[in-house]
Image (cartoon, rainbow, N blue to C red; front, side, top):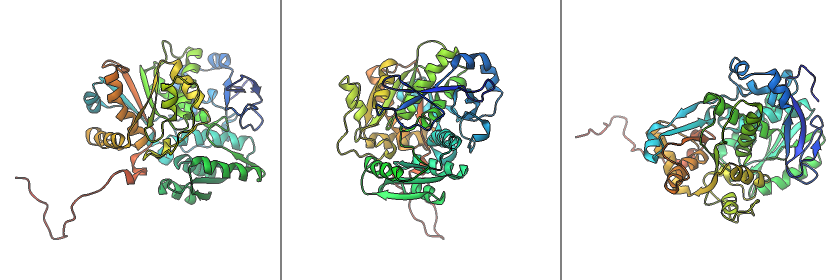
Amino acid sequence: MAPSSAYSFLSHLECSRTGERYDADVLQGVSAEGAPLLARYDLDRVRETVTREDIAARAPTLWRYHEVLPVRGEDHVVTLGEGMTPLLPMPAYGRRAGIERLLMKDEGLVPTGTFKARGAAVGVSRAAELGVKGVAMPTNGNAGAAWALYAARAGMESLIAMPEDAPRITMAECQVAGAELYRVDGLIGDAGKLVNAATRERAGYQEVSTLKEPYRLEGKKTMGYEIAEQLGWRMPDVILYPTGGGVGIIGIHKALREMLELGWVDGELPRLVAVQATGCAPIVEAFENGARESTPFPGARTVAFGITVPKALGDFLVLDAVYATGGTAIAVTDEDLLKAQAELAALEGAFICPEGAACFAALGPLRESGHITAGDEVVVLNTGTGVKYPETVRVDAPLLAKDGQIPGRG
């Protein structure tokens, strides 16, 4: 247990399937059941120690919620200023979609340009605190870039493996951070097998694949805390989240439940919507079948590379979050998500990633089905900046001679 003057009130880790308790101050991976471990806190002590007003007076980073984060000592925090991203009204797109109160949580503004910085900040900080020498992971791109850069910030080594067709910019980020980088002829699962084998042979390395360590999730959950705080400590009606490995939607659900127990929010939880692409939609298929877990999605491929996860380790936790909140799961085509990406930029001046655009593409069908009503307050998570995906936009501007003229408009 943490001391009485704790920076964190981390209590223990818990198997997400059986509820078995694990020591949080020993380096852990998954449970004996092969399931993700969830961090648990002494929320009674948190309630007695900190108020919402205390939090409001703190620096605008995710570490303002440090009592419900796993890092024991402030001196072990590894940060690049991540967190407190804006919650922006999207009125023009909302009018087009028939939604009066549409908001976007813009994660494209955090360090490394994607929400992956949240998980990397907390995961690297806790790994360093527990004496880890190096972190290793398979990635579709952005997570590897974030963990490589935060590992460099912490003075740790990193080993990153990603599919050959992952975005080149993320490979460049890993390389410039000094990571040991490998490209794999295959999908993220193939990269995962290589990383797993490598970490078994390297002393002091921790495998930090999605949900194979407990603390990336804790960084991601801060999006839920921020949404509530930015709305005046209340919850919206609906939250849409682009879902691959599912850490974000699991984390937001965890945060909302923690805040309810703390008494920081009240009322019904938002309906959580898992958004996928039709080219990789295992969660959607499972939801439509009423299943509690997904089956591997064959031939997975989508331009929204970050959500190309054929079978997520935490799929049952994603589905639990959707079912428990009266939410849903929906898939959109690459054509529709790229159209939404362009429309949002033209209407609102926001150039977002294709994964975030998938959520905007889903608004129309959700509105038509009645899952979202005109009066609902809807929050869409944009998980990264569009500039990291230059290949999603074709530039076809005319080339003019240097002594030419721009055509007039008659």
